[in-house]
Image (cartoon, rainbow, N blue to C red; front, side):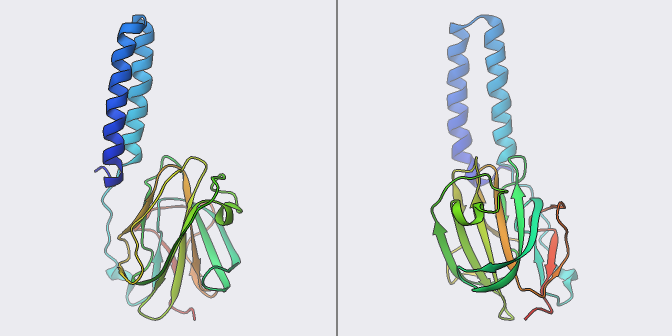
Length: 223
């Protein structure tokens, strides 16, 4: 299944690639035409692959009353650290950073259910996403969801070196449902999620995670 964010992009790309292949047929030798065509076709196949939106199992019945936080994105855990969150929470938190390469699914999903109480877009630079300073300097969004038990979970979409557009669907004062889409980032990027200090972390640095499925933390005992 192709994600809705890819429909227009793929249509325009198809038209442009078709025109380039047609023009190269008349301008170049058969060998050069073949090489150009293969190059463009491979890139188009990559674009289709990038905008894929596979179905995910969004059933969390086996949580048995626990407050489980799921991964908001596909990717690799690049950092788990104690940091001070100074935009909204104003306190020390556990920050889990997930890097999404251009090969990962780039759909972003709510890590918890609750009410969206804060949404803000920050313009910025396009540093390499796995650098620590990218979380403060790059283009990014900040979303905060307050769970039914009053816990506030903050997470950020962070644009990377290749990512030039962050798409955010989450809106303030709406209901967030764990596992449902809240946004999309085009090409390589990162998501940071800030959890209470005494949360139980269920993953480790270097581990690969799946958005909407991988359990990354249990915040049941956190304050």
